Image (cartoon, rainbow, N blue to C red; front, side, top):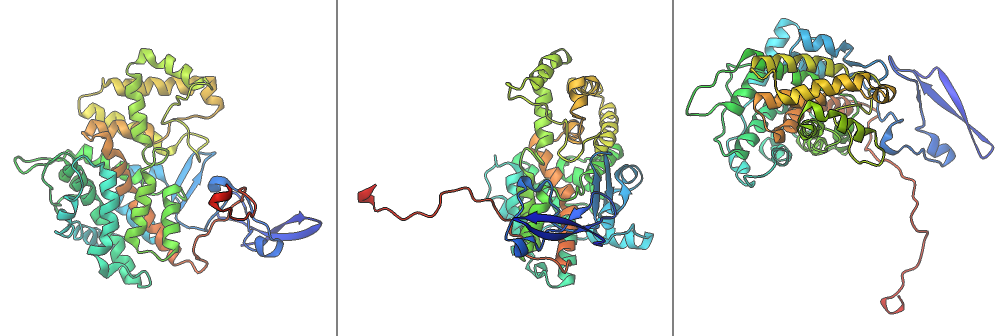
Length: 429
């Protein structure tokens, strides 16, 4: 893998560093032995230029606007596949045969119920608790309810934990939603597909029948697929870092959910919708465009640009199509929020300021509009993101566990604090 090298000179001493070549993407300078040889660290806040692992799961080319799961472009998977098939692909590396898919679907479906005592656990939270706060606690507590699948050294227990998490996260997210609005929990329905089952658990009530619209289920499934994995982002890195200590899988996923909650990460779609509502009408867009360009104004346009993508977010193209379909289906094609979104997108794509900075709409720009149209409050946007991303976290966690190079994460620092000094007694201060 290392067929090239680079020379680094420090204090008249030369050091040879291997250069690793990936399947796709830039070459990687191997600095693992640099500290031992030269007694120096590298400095990279945010790890924006550092590869923390090697992986076979997801590839992103930010300049070209490409996202691949195991080599398959996200556009193909979103239009031709479905979420559970994508889950299989991410977990096992290949698309399943018909028999493999049926076995996998059956295993997931049979694990959708949660332990009955977990109902009591939910009731320990305040009614006005944010669903994400509830999910962090409940998912972390799964290790207390399913302690027969917490031994990370046992490959079968890892497999059982993986299936349980994929199967139960929609149930837990729906329960968190129902609890927050004071409605009774709805049990899973094994006759429904993955996305339809989630919608049914969120919106059905015992008093009357609820029929899931197939078009809404497809849109929900597509949202799950588009968010399934995204390489070494903040929450995935958190899961890997937690897992590197040997923590059980439920604790690791709970850590990922906590990280995802941040407005700069999973909460971005909620922030984007709130911004569109703040703008309110199309005629106010120029005012907010001007504010976004003003360096003295703290306002910034949410849903534009991406830390990785320096071109159009490939997920946004698919999400835009879903937004049009869902809003037309629900009879809200004249939704003022969507009108603002479309006009804002048009202006931004033509405005020299945004074009020069490559501030293209990202996936969050449209996902919030779709979820609102379906009837979800903004507080549920990030929980839905979390249940979508769970399979990616699990795949990354399992890959890390099986990596012979795996070791506990221990980032270094550039210390700029006080030099050594002696303690001074109270009387002399």
